[in-house]
Length: 346
Image (cartoon, rainbow, N blue to C red; front, side, top):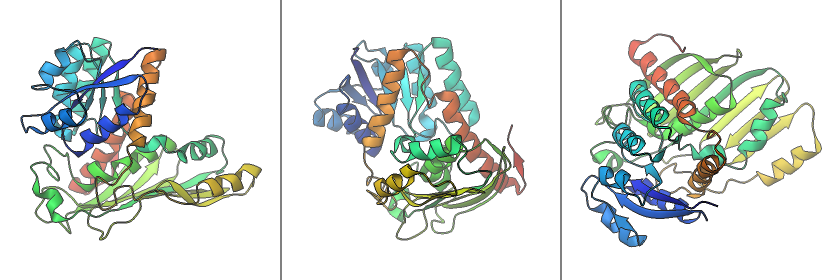
């Protein structure tokens, strides 16, 4: 089995999660880090006994590298991704792929042209509880799905926004929705029919110093006729677990962080009680008040699935086109809030 050498572009908190995830994958090796000149890449390289590259341009040209992960601020994903594609390197990129659809499309086009793989990081898709929920939806156990909503009542103190990019339009692409809540928006995109229309409001209520929003609410209409809600904030002290609710004419599920508080269907089956027992307790806080308080295991599964796709020559389940869908919904929320009107998605 091929061994894959990884380079990590970026040297912040999330880069360390990438490194831990790579270290746990048998056929992966961490070859090095690079940053924009902060010096943090050298510290991480020393920690993981690997190389510190001068910058991403040097990294992607290195024969030591097969895959790069991108863990830079969101508005700086395009440039290293395109450089990697042009150098023949595969890329797995943190959420969101980029902060505009034009920049996302440029990334996708570069990798299509080069014949390299572009994948997104949405590690919540790999939580164990998501598989039985997906199966229940696909097999029709909900009957007619009437509603799906996600809630991310998180907290970030003012110090979180004191750096140069969090909450900025240029580098963060927005605020609480595109940075924190995007993972739950992605679960909606993964589990439900495509979002057809959005009506939204956004405000900066708890952090007036930032450019973008810290609170957003959107009403959705899905392609199958179901209605839904997105609520995301970083102004809900002290921060609570994120939640997904799906209900229909024959069933209801409430997913809390990584557990089920409700799993109820009209056609009760033997496996339902087992599912309720297996996923009855949440195992973590999911970063509700601390962005570093998450497990790296989701990233590990995300990266492993990417490697598996490369090994088999198959499409990665969160390829560029798939990761783009979530960005499109988030940007539609922002557009609706700005223009104060209903936005229909293509």
